[in-house]
Image (cartoon, rainbow, N blue to C red; front, side):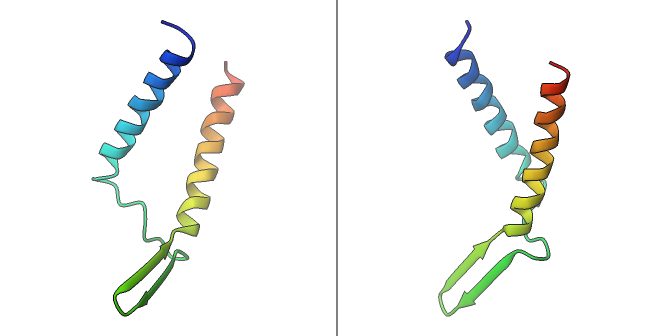
Length: 68
């Protein structure tokens, strides 16, 4: 198996593992994340969490590409 099917299977496994780990690791709710509560509505925008995940993933992909 090669090409797109293999890539989709790898992406699916990665999404599954990350989803499973997110139950145990509380990465959200960092200082700097925007939370607005008004009445019955809550708006949550995880800006700091997004920035940290972006930097970490960029470093991971950089090192994977460097050693490939």
